[in-house]
Length: 95
Image: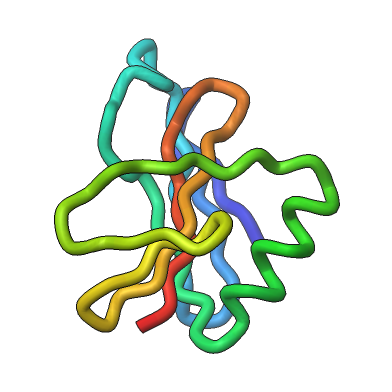
């Protein structure tokens, strides 16, 4: 279900989750993660499915994290980052 909130924002809701999408002239300029999806034990399969569909995963050198393939891990965190066509950074996380 979606509800338009003016010309700048549209909200999507499914179950207890709501996602707001808004117009920004700064899209793609943020150098931090914009959205995180917790995928639990499905991290490897989700990464594989997205990669098979052409998603390119980002690799970052971060203190305390090592990398195996496209998945970074360390300190109980397991995460994979990717960008949308505008350069916004997203990640999939499993703790």
